[in-house]
Image: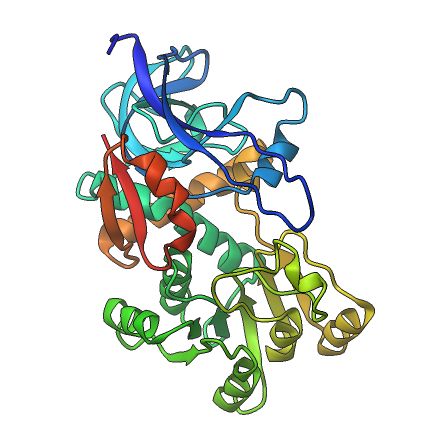
Length: 363
């Protein structure tokens, strides 16, 4: 390969044709020129990148000026600084760093090199491996945002984490427990329950909903003495009950997902619901039920930190605090598989089936 070229993983731009069809996205490896950083930019040699999917609907809303020929893949990276632009003072050549690429970046993190803005990076603790750093940064920032800035949890709160065995779920469980909350997690099967119990001993109450999401409310009320929980963080919800709407792509899920009514019913007085459902629709009865509880709904979109630099100081605080917790072992990330960049396109195609842990690309 030409030394002025690098390998990078990209994905096709696909538009959904009908309301009932889910588009198939093609991921592929290609060679592109290695760009040099401009003012306030940093060129990083990627050592590890955690694989994660971003809905193309969100990417399409960010790339409104011009429609790109393809989209980047991978945001959570760790690596070594190889070149810096003018005016960069935050990092130096040779520093080991980690960070998250903005969703509107034209560079893939799943590549041999990528370019960051200076303040999207922090220095990596030397004792923390590149794989653990990349595997933990994205989910930890998301969990930190949900729990601290949106739910504003306090010691003694009861927090329900939907899909607690997911990589994001385990990060949220660890942070909530670290901050003194009582945690409850849902799982889909016995294997996920065993995974949580093995990875996070004494985690608290685990509700196995399997194919019966209707047991969620009764289980939570039994566990909380009928009071409900203070905070719920979901992993998406079902919104419709009639058979016709159940065929919509957003409603077709491989694993059991609670209905929005069940989520609301689990909330206690002044409860906070933090949702990952970007197109959540609340009907008047839903709003009335939330109103009678004095409850609130927050939409979890952690990428907002790096799409706007108005809160850059807070974002830097989050990164430093997270990496201190990862370095000290207060929060752990489970890397279940490491792959090469050549294997990444295949792994991206199958990523929706991954329920536990994180897949990390190494270069």
